[in-house]
Amino acid sequence: MEYIVTSINGLLNFWVDTAWYIALAMSALVNLLVFFTAAYSVDKLSLWFSKELKSGAYIDTRPLKANQKQREMKYGAISCLIFAVGSLFTRELYSDLWPNTVFNFVWQVLVFSVYYETYSYFVHRLLHTKHFSKYHAVHHWSVRVTPWSAYSVHPVEATLIAISAPIFMAIFPLSLGVAFVLHIMGMVFTITLHSNYQFANGRFSGYMLYHQLHHSRGSVNFGFVNKYWDTLLKTKRCS
Image 1 (cartoon, rainbow, N blue to C red):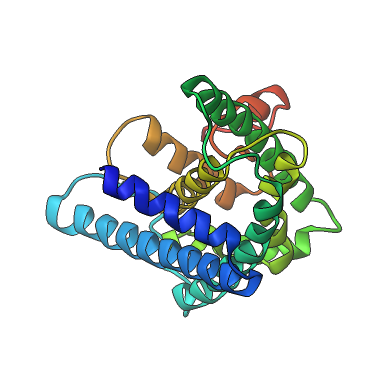
Image 2 (cartoon, rainbow, N blue to C red):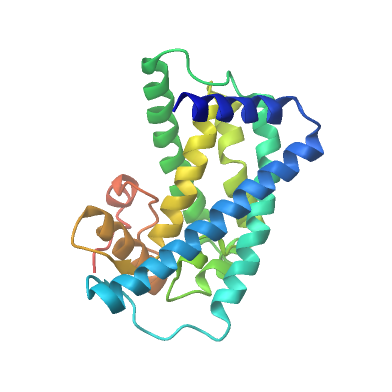
């Protein structure tokens, strides 16, 4: 465990100190690796649960559009490159490598989580307005979503995602390690959220159904993790 921690810290320090174009290449590689590995794994796991274990079920059973996954992979790869560019701003804005106390770690995670839920909700609402809906249409082209749909978004939308952390870091202190971990966890969560599969009854499967309803019905269920803003602003739908 100590070796893993030391290696991660070494890579983070190298990433901070190296030339920007090397840092960009490293970020692009990590984002692409996480996207393709997680999306492929969730996609195959859903199929395995469905065919072999007979456990759970696909939420939307309509057939996929022609070449849908290939299109989603293309836009997802472009989004990963944009995320890599956004990460260069975090190199300039981070407060320290890791929080110096457990309290600071918990505090940073909680504050950023509240911020991101608020940011993502209102940006999502913005993307459904007249002037921005043409960009968000790239994502909503996938009516029956797949794990590959998660980051199948227009470059404008990918940019809005990419700048979320730098905006926060320009106002509040956020450690580089915390930003990195939350970004990776956020990617995996978003990919799983778009699995269109209920692995079992429970809260997490409810998130998948909740977001699938957004793709099916449009202007409802804008929340990312928490349903607070949807409930408060009456955009929540459960069926």
